[in-house]
Amino acid sequence: MSEKKPRGTAAPALRPRRRKVGVIGVLGELFITAGVFVLLFIGWQVWLNDIIVGAEQTNAASELSQQWEDAAPTEEPVEPAPDPDAGATPEVPAGEGEPVVAAAPGAAESFANIIIPRLGSDYIRSIAEGTGANVINNREAGVGHYEQSQMPGEVGNFAVAAHRTTYGAPFHDIEKLVVGDSIIVETQDGWYKYIYRGTQYVRPTGVDVLLPVPQFPGVAATDRVITMTSCHPKLSSAERIIAFGVFDSWYPRSGGAPTEISTLAQAGGN
Amino acid sequence: MYAAFFRFLPGPVWARVLLCLLLAAAVLAACVFWVFPFVNSFFAVPEATVGE
Image (cartoon, rainbow over all chains, first blue to last red; front, side, top):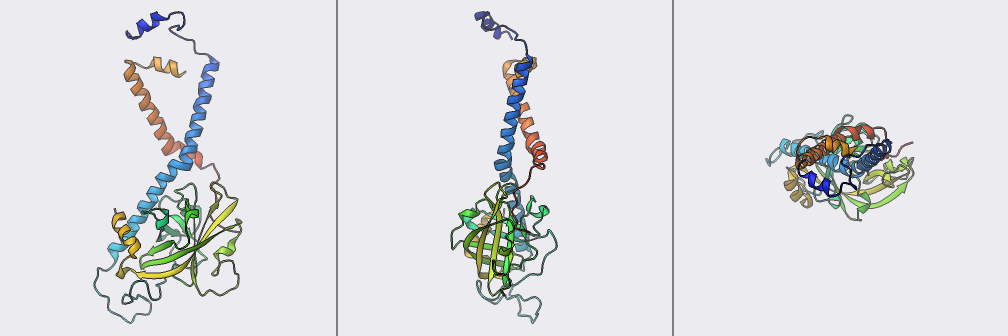
C-alpha cells in the first residue's frame, strides 16, 4: 500500500483512489467472463479433452497388449497337439496360414487393439464389443465392434466404429490414410494385418457397409475385410466416413509382432 | 468487480497477483474435471456409427 501512494498523488485528478463499482461495470465483467468460459469450453471439447481421453485410451490399449504378451507362453515350442478347437498354428511361419478366429466376446469387453502407424507411431486403441455409447464414449476402449459383423481374421467383414471428434477421437485422422497403409488388429491370439484400400462417404443409414461384402447385399463373402466408420464432416453427424481395408497376413502371437510394429511394441509397452 | 476483488485481497501486490493466479488455476481445473464434462453431457455427440 505504501508503494502506491506516490502514484496516487502523482495524478490525483485523473485517478480517483476508489472508483465506484457500477451495475453496468459488473454486468459487463460478468458477460466477458461468461464469454471466456464459453471459449474455454470449446477449446476443452474439441482439443484438450481429446488429448486427455486419447492418452487414457492409448494407455489402456498398451496395458491390454502387455497383458496378452505376458500371458502368452514364452518361446517354448508348442507341440502340434491334434486339438481341433484351439486351431493354433504355431508352426506356420509368420504372415502365412489361416488366421485364428476368436469366439465372439462379451458385450463391451475389450477383445482387440487396433494399430495404425499412419495415425501416429504410437497409435494404439482398444476395440470393445458393441457400438453403444458405453463403448465408443469410453475412456478405455473408444473403438466399438459392430456385433453383427465378423471377427478379426474371419471371412467377411470386421466392422468397427469410433469417434472422429470428441471422446478421445480415435479416428480423428482417418482421412489421412493412404492406399497401402497397414491397419493391424491385435488380439490375444496374434496380429491380423489389413491393408487400407479406400474410403467412401455414406449417409448415416448406409448400413450396407457392414455387410460381409460391403455394399453388396446377399453376396457370399470370400475375402476378409475391415471396415471403419466414423462421423463426417468432423463435429457433425450429417454423413459417415467409411474406410475399408483388406486382409493381408496373419501373425500368430508365438511368432511375434509384425516387424513394422515390433519396434513400436517395445517402445510403447510402457 | 475484479478490481474491487483485487483490492479486497490482503497482502502486498505480488502476493495478491499470486493468489489470483492460484484461484484462476483452481477454477480452470474445476472446469476441466467437473464442470465441462457435466455441461458436455447436454450436447449431442457426433455419431460415428451407421444404423437404420
